[in-house]
Image (cartoon, rainbow over the protein chains, first blue to last red):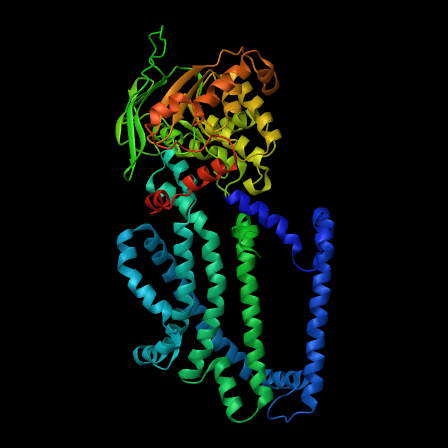
Length: 286
Length: 303
């Protein structure tokens, strides 16, 4: 019963973070606000301590092995001024966005057909099992062979990484439609298309968005791998060349940007979920 | 196979609102319904009670057109349900509202699918929500409503189409006791005014007595009718007044006996088979839950 699950989750939400059991019965919007504020303060302090410790530790270590945050910042300034960083980021983003887009636009319809038609299920199940249990990195040389070292090869790698989380989530979403909702459509004599439009697709939406959230992370992995194993370009390319020439500070800059990119994109997909599927936020977490 | 072929006293020429004849249904090798016959008089309130596995919900689903009977016929107001009868009103268990639609859109769902024009839909939704005292909640979403309010929306959604027959499948099984009593009173009130034919599936004897004109008692393995009882308590009733009426306790005891394994009739009917559990208690509720989540049912409808 979805309702029971929801009720359970509602009482479990306040136990996150700083809540002590005695606080649970009295949780109101005020307390949640206060707690969010406390969480933000504690997170900031923890990150602050990390940077200070890093900076202090880096002073005592060879510059070849580790540099402190200040050195990274100055390397960042330098790379901005030469324009190297901007063009690399643009190149990477182009690959990432194109690959991600191709990956999920292919995955959604296939996932829906897979869930809807037994024949499709039987036809693609072996491939999905095989590919899902294969480390996708193993296929990278194949993609390079087929699509080359350039843009197309990189996009192929990224889209293959982005594809699976969305495929599996879309499938899961479309088969886990509440049977009662399908009964309802039947009672109201909804056509096949109306059933899809009003029941199956909306109920799959939160799953698809959750898939996008996972997929973003996979796509970033695919991006870096593609830039390492094809012709070194973009942010991954800088990491590669900087490390081989022992410019440790320069190596860290693109890594930081990739991390920031990951955090931003993940937050974006979470925002998307809150925006288009507010009913499911409590059920599947933040 | 023995079947108490009780014929409903019919003085009128009007066909019964629902006429079920020889309804049989198998789930795999299990006989869920065995030659079930009954009529629902137009404008009457009838409850189906029985232990889990007696096929009461299946019976309702067959009448609603959600499931097909293995054999037998259903007529709605004299017209075979195999033909294109208008949609019936169905009130499901909790959780049947579409979470991505507002209250307004949920209640309008059936009307939109019936291709009514916009002004008409708006007016009907307003009227239905007024009946369940939810005017003003149009823009809310199901997850913002309490369980009791969700079920009110469910009732409004079924009423909005103004169906001749209302089928209710344990609609109050998962709301708390106090809310359930309030909802009983409201349902009685709505029914007094509209006089729709209602078929109400429940596992609660008390609920059945408070609400119904007639109670059909079913037994399991195979699912069949073992008795039909008139509820002669005067109307209008409320949850509170019904319990105090003379004859309430007697009727309750009678139904309980019919449903208890030790009762001679049940033993006779079941032919040495050990009957299902007694009616009340949490394990029954669990059984019902697991029945609705039956993977085979889910799969066949999910794909």
